[in-house]
Amino acid sequence: MSHWLVIVGVALVTFGLRAAFIVFADPHRFPHLFRRALTFVPPAVLAAIVAPGLLAPAGAIDPGFANPRWIAGIVAIAFAIRLRTPLAAIVAGMAALWLLQWGLPRVA
Amino acid sequence: MLIGTIPFGFVAGVAAVGSGMTPLEGIALSVLSFSGIAQLVACQLVAVQSPVLLTIAAAAVVSLRFLMYSAALAPHLAHLDRKWRVLLSYLMTDQSFAMAVRRFSEPGDVRHRHWHFLGSALTLYLSWQLAVILGVLAGAQVPASWSLDFAVVLCFIALLVPAVRTRADLGAAIVAGAVALAAAGMPYRMSLVVASIAGIVAGMGIESARNVEYRPRRG
Image 1 (cartoon, rainbow over the protein chains, first blue to last red):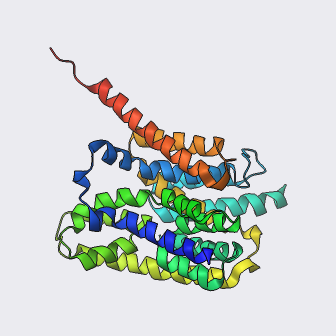
Image 2: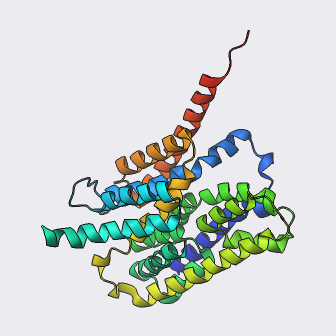
């Protein structure tokens, strides 16, 4: 039962936020400060998701070489900056991770 | 973007059944909310039996970026009737927003652009749902050593890099990332909320400071 409450609630908030200005309200009627804050939401929220995914994949901060994810992440970021296509970051990052976790231990 | 969407959807499907949801519940969550990160956060909190309202609030915080996308797209979609605007809102994602912004900023005929938006968004929607269903069905059979969950992080890197266009954006991202790491131990993924707010405040602060710096002096 509580699963269905979560499902309906998440559906309502995701739709409500997407539709907020497209369907319901004119963004120009909101204070300038609010609109300025909104422009920083994507870099802030995305970085808040990415940083722990790279540096603390198991919950605790692990910037060592036993954790290949931050290295693969740097490779992905470099490809995303150079090639400007989302595909490049995903393919390069995944390839780097597999290489680091499977390729290198066998060579060493 | 599809290449990233498919493993991401698959991971979201695996996470749904892993959290204790039934396959039907997992698919319903995906069909109704169509947001990978909101689905993943909800599944993580369902798995640890968090209170319902807290779970919904956490999904709302990670979805706040939709508010910005909605504000940015609204002027381009204002000429459409309500049904169109409801449909395109429902289908809007990070990826379709990124594609739409590129297309809407090109010169040319504006009358048919919403069809392009619909086309790309529907393609993403169908591939996403298919990938989630496959993930729900495969469940725990996927070996953890494939590290498919890393595709999720990579999707967000692919979105984050083009979202950083100014120094203030970069500051917002660095502060949010650092706070997310420092606060990683907070329960119920509260670190995400705290880090996002810190990043937004930092971005605004840097922007204001730079504006003051470059303001020409009077007299």
